[in-house]
Amino acid sequence: MTSTEVTVVLGDCAETDARAVLAALGEAFPSAEGPAGPAAGGGGATVWTSVFDVAAPGGHSPAGPVPLGRPVTVEAQGGYGAVDRLLAELAAVFAVEDQGTAAGDQEKDVHLRLRSRASQNA
Image (cartoon, rainbow, N blue to C red; front, side, top):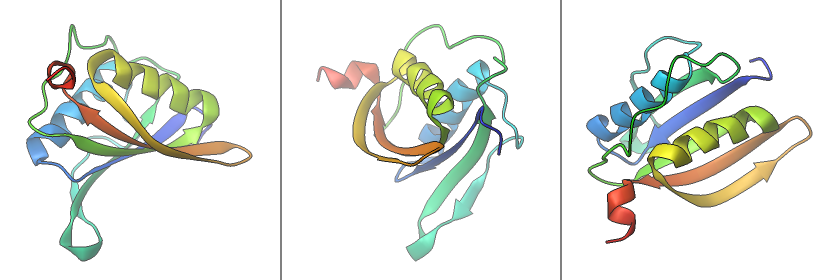
């Protein structure tokens, strides 16, 4: 993984919500691995994983908030600047709740909960 790539893991959500989050990120940044698909996690859980290169914008951000049926759990891991750029993109289209950060010398790992912006005020 390069210093501009961020690994994104989505879980604890419906497939439609995972695809909505990945599509929003895919509009802003190219995926270094191609389309993400579900993978079985521990205990029978399903997770979606993709790697995004935040150095090369893929086009544009979604025009407005992206609706989610339910909250989505996100783990993003990569270089400090790369993760920060990805988080800024997520915050532009979702309500983002920080669930914790683990920091190292070269990388950080953030845990988030995403919600639809409309549901944040409900």
